[in-house]
Length: 231
Image (cartoon, rainbow, N blue to C red; front, side, top):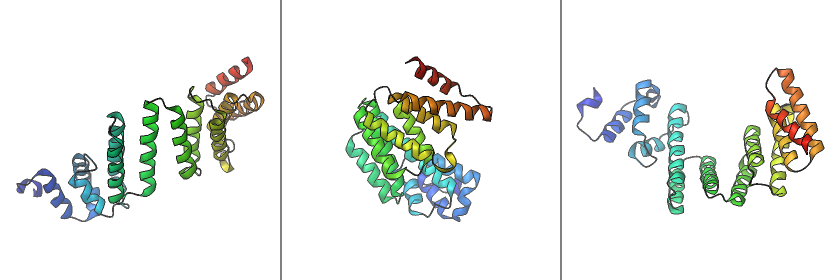
C-alpha cells in the first residue's frame, strides 16, 4: 500500500520505502525482489543509497550489489568501452565504499577479458600473474583454475610463464591438499607442457590412483598419460 499511495518516480518510491523500515526487513523476499528489480546499474539512485548503508551483514543485499558489478564489468568488456569509462567505474566503486580487493578483482577481470578478446596473450599472462601473486596466493582453488587455464591455452608456451603457474599449483598442493586429484592433474599437465615427461607421468599416475580410490572418473588424466607416453 505504501508504494501505491505515492505518485513519485519509481526509484524515489523505492528509496522512501526502504528508508521507512529497519535494514533487516530488506531481507524479506518481497523487499529483496524489489531491490533486485530496481538495482539495474551501479549508477542509479537505489545503488547509491545502498552503498551508503552498512550492508556487509546483509549478505543477500551485498550479493545483489556484487551481481550488478559483475554485469557492468561484462558490459564494459563486451561493448569495448574506453579505458576512461573503466577508470570512472572503478573510481565510482571506490567512492561507494566497495572493498579495495573487490575493486582490484574487477580490474583484473576487465583487463584479462580484454586481453583475451584482443588475443594479446603476453598481456593476458602478465595480468594473471600480477593479480594472483598480489592477492590470491592463499586461495588454492583460484590458483588451480588459472594454472590450468595457462596450461590449456595453446598460445601460451613461454616457460617462464608456465613455471609461475607450476609454482601456483605447488602452493595449492600444500597441507591438506597434497592428494587433491584436480590439483595433481593440473601439475602433471603443466609439467608435460614444460617438457618434463618423467615428472609429469609420475604425477599423473598418482592422480589416477587417488581418483580410483575415490571411485571417480580420471579419464582426462588417463588421456594425458597417453599423450606423455606417445612422445
